[in-house]
Length: 111
Length: 113
Image 1: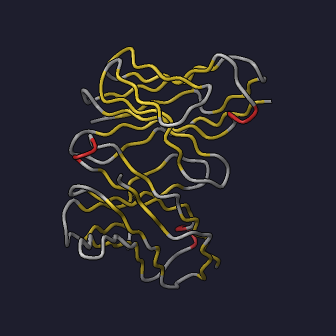
Image 2: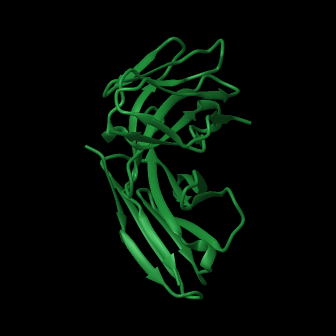
């Protein structure tokens, strides 16, 4: 069966520090992969999605970036965090014929 | 482009009340439609789905019918429980858009005992 792993679950980082959140999927191949951010009390904001290795679409301009070095690995990064980067980050995957499956999320607090 | 519009919350109900959360969509093709639920501090979980017109998705007492004529997928439950308190998201997946998921903004539901 398919599973998705996202880590860490919580993270507190100072302003200006780098960020790396990792997401891996098991049990499927060539999935669509997504990074979302959810600010407190707000809906989902799609940050990046990927339909294949090295193929990244950015939905909003910001100081975040994403990479997909392997088929089932999706990484969200920043060189220098801002206070406004605080939020709940969710990784998800979907197949061509299925719904999306979400990781448990990472609560990022930038201080 | 594709879009999803769902009713704004928060919605506050008493236990055993009837629930409706409206969701309408626009899509260029024939999308699949989904309702997801997010409990506090957790990721999203699929609640139900429908893949073609007139399909009815159902799960845990929740239902939604894919209405192509009104481009709607309203979520309903006949008798809510306190444990249903969560945020509910409507979404679509369109093959014509590379199966990219399009989301509504979410509706927060609070059920009081």
